[in-house]
Length: 522
Image (cartoon, rainbow, N blue to C red; front, side, top):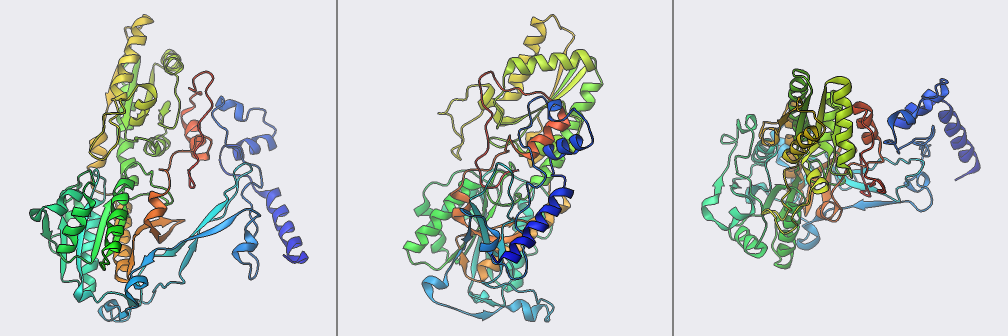
């Protein structure tokens, strides 16, 4: 970098550093110190370890024609997550998209292979990402690979239910029809449905017109992805050359295997995923569809718990929410409700005696307490049997809500507090069975439309997601090759949650807090 550019950068950085107050817990602490307060992080009783410096988020400003290399620090790199295209194996094919004529020239914002999105480059004082990502932007292409009249498409939903599934089915079907695709199958019963002829049903715009108003899946979800070869052969037998699979990381692993099988068979088919998980634990993407709706419903359950707790003397409102390995639903619902006294996440190691002592202190002081626990805390507080698994291969978790309720009442009895009551609320299936809210509905339809645009352009082995607020196409390996995303217990969102609840640390003696190693964390 030329010396004048370096001086420029130093001046900009110095000026920004003197005026900025870093976001999050440490920003608050720094601000209070500047104002002459003594109380800062100590108020939060050891829960906050994600401290910012005043210039923690300053990266080199982009000046003039700076390239990515100018912005990166030594040891950092940009990695392009480029999806595959059928043209690489079957040769280039070009058809003018029928959308131009259909919309009478109104559609002008086309993407191409040069439409790249770069991950926001940011740094904390003690957190340095060595790798930043670049993605191919999703959206309609002016030239498409497939002749729409020769396309046979299939749609399947796998795993558990999630708000927005019907919106995705509707969006896929309607956009395929917009392109003029003559045959669209919906495959019922998840991956297992591929092997049964009676699970293949014809879809059209009329059949899916109002399904987005309902929760669940019109195609019926199911877990398990055995017999990949048999499934792939059934798909090829139907002449499907455009396959849309909606599901989580396990479903994407199955989709990747189907894609690999078709490559070996030299079969021309675009295999496309749309990431789905109510836990919001899929890596790389900003958020998964249905998550915002789930949080909204979870807040309603928390509010009911608060009403119950405050409406009776010495009452504990106990709410169990979804979150097998990741506590994002609990975290965001707790922050949104702003009436919770204790939040327990799967990412936390929890001392039951410390928790019970805190509950007693709150009851003695306020006469009530609201506790929200993620289902995955059962693996921490209780001993799960690793041999008991569901059809998706997940370890069956013991019911931590019932366990906590029993332990609280045992503790109360042992301490002569027979006047305590616990009002236990488990809204698990209510949260995931509702229709998508307006924001999620829009999100689902845009994801579905972009999945079709990408498939029409010949891209395959990719999943549509939103990264850094841009819709992109991600290779399957970007999802399947990374660990599930978890709440960073040293991060700013965890600190925000602690500030809402005011809870102490429940870390067992001698334990060190867990820190998320996922590439993208909240």
